[in-house]
Amino acid sequence: MGMEQAAFEDRTTWLCSACDLCYPTCPQEIHISAVIGAVRELAIRAGYRSPIKTAQVNGLTCVACGLCVEVCPYDAIALAEASVMGRGRQVTIAVVDPNRCTGCGLCAASCRSTSIELPDEFSNEELVAELWNWMSSPVAEARE
Amino acid sequence: MSWEPRILVFQCQYCLFTEVDQGWMNTQLPPHIKLIKVPCTGRISPLFLLNAVQGGADGILVSGCMPENCHFKEGNLAARRQLDEFARFLSYLGMEEERLRFAWIDLEEQGRIQAELADLTEQVRSIGPAQRLVTRPAQAVGTSP
Image (cartoon, rainbow over all chains, first blue to last red; front, side, top):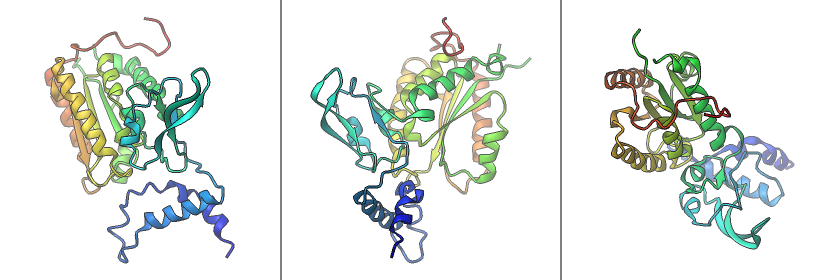
């Protein structure tokens, strides 16, 4: 067929977060997210990787409490042994499967040691900085 | 001059606002309101609310999708559990609970976000400035106190 490559490279294959808002409105009751999920599985097997900015674990501070594993709606996080520079060769920490993670940030909000983070504009640091920057801006200071 | 309360709005980026409302949020917010967009309400860590009240925000609005309409399956439900709990903790510490508001907004509810913001502003204005939990005066990030 020769269309696999187009399907695997298309961002929409990876963007679907399985919210299933399309499902109840589809007149044919097609479970679209399941179809896209299947395409994604095939893409992973063919060696493709998700282009989404996914959650990242700080192995130095993760205590493997498993809270992120519990809250992840996509089962994208698991506790596993990994080699962490400065801690050892076989340290149990949370490990994110970048192909399942959709970057919702639920894990980052629930982590009690801020060891799991979204990159760039949705990181704790950026969001808190945005908040503080506004608080100290002249507009916000006009309250007195 | 009348006092304007500082209001922070946390909004999920897929929030089911109508386009008109989202456009209003993006471009026409009054200067005393600050919009912070997150991928999902589930991304809002209690840490953010804590930073907001520590910095002297007078009111906080958390706006998300209706239950069962979350773009990330159940992020909004998790947010509600976690932030509700934290809101109770803040009120235990002495913050008036009227300062923190949750709005779960449906696609059909055009104009609701404006109404919520106006209402919250009025409510907070009648309570007065938040000072109970302010730990340090607001300052630019990176500068020393």
